[in-house]
Length: 73
Image 1: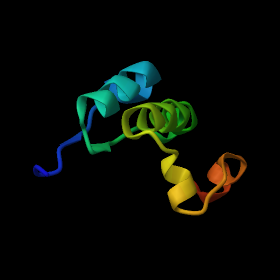
Image 2: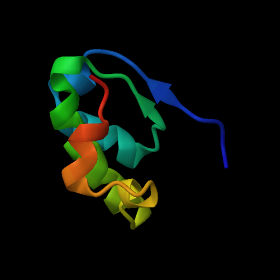
Image 3: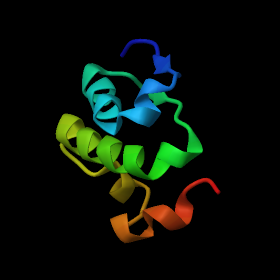
Image 4: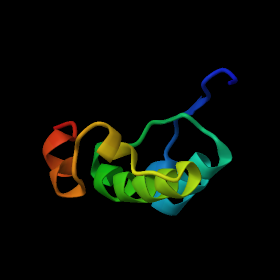
């Protein structure tokens, strides 16, 4: 396994589909603005499920309905 790769910038916040593309491309960490977090979270969760074949939130014991309760305020 390679070294973790992260990305920060405005585009993932403005374009949640771009954030999903980054996940599919193997980016490990994406910084987003708080106002775009909810939309990006949904796209990233779907892209991770597609990429890894499992729901990563389930691995943490978080059901999708609970996801917003655990997000950063």
